[in-house]
Length: 342
Image (cartoon, rainbow, N blue to C red):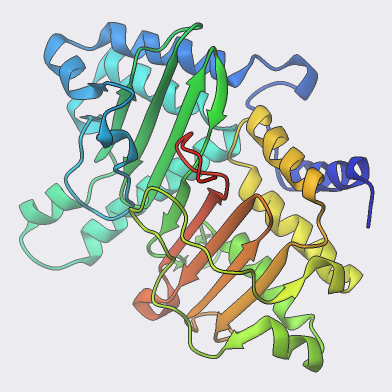
């Protein structure tokens, strides 16, 4: 087994190789993300009018804090499409405070796909526009943001759910963290090819294809993929015993790919969140992280995979719309929403 320090360095190197994990500064120079969120949330509250503030705010203990989902549905909070000028700018600044530059760009890509769905789907135009809109995303504040308080916030809409809890300006929970993409792939000709979550698929498929026949029989659990990820809209992750192949039993090539895959899921979050997640991996070690695959092995064949460690679970599904519709989530096995499962 590699040393904890070595694991951290390897994961950090993979993250840096595929994109910056901090908003604008190096690890040692960063403004604490929890404090940045508190400041951004306070500014957001200041510019809302009375009615908007009533829509946006809840007690920290309100059951609404755990009421998450990634499907198109009615939501509580204040919607971006009801904001403009200073209020919209403050809303976007709050969202940005919870993400890296790469992560914020990813949210814009996910939201932009709503415009594609608006154009693709049939039916009444007004109904389509009410359902599909890149500003139909909502911010909810739970508790009172501040340097000496316990509070949380959510940014959510179709195929996005970002959930944070902050205590004394420190992020104490950053899950569930959900990104989706529909269409998962858009090919509009040379130079106009977009796969918002493509790397999360490609790296996992490379792990599958790099396995020898004996290993593949343990890793590839079924040629039929589950219909979706588990636990959509459920407050805590649904998990079974880890399945598939252990990191310790992978080839060096597969281990390198696994590090890159985990890094892909880390790059959206602020550096302090990345550190916390890495520390959990360091403590338990990489060896017992399992990888399992279901479904077809080729692009546009329905497929599903799970990466499960002692502290986290990644679940990915691409089965809908001829395997052109992605759901991907990172959850905390100790408990999402700062609610312990122990």
